[in-house]
Length: 95
Image (cartoon, rainbow, N blue to C red; front, side):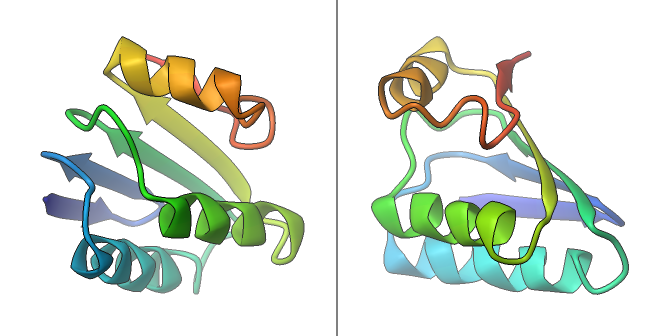
C-alpha cells in the first residue's frame, strides 16, 4: 500500500491488508486532522479495508467529529461499505 498526502486529502493506492497499512493510514490521518476537521480519503485500488481501518474511521466521525469523505474507485469496496451501512457515515461515494 502507498499513501500520498496533501493537506486535508489522502490518496491510498494498492491494497489495504495489514496492520502496517492501518498504522500508516492512522499516521497520515492524524497528521492531516491537526489542522482541519474536514478530510477526504481516496482509495484508488483496494477492494476491501481492514476492520481496524473501519473502526478508526468510525472513531474519527463519531468521536472526533471529523467531516470524512471517502472516495473509492473499486465497485466492490463501495458495495462492502453499503453492506456494512457505512456509506452515509463515511460520506462514501464511488469515483
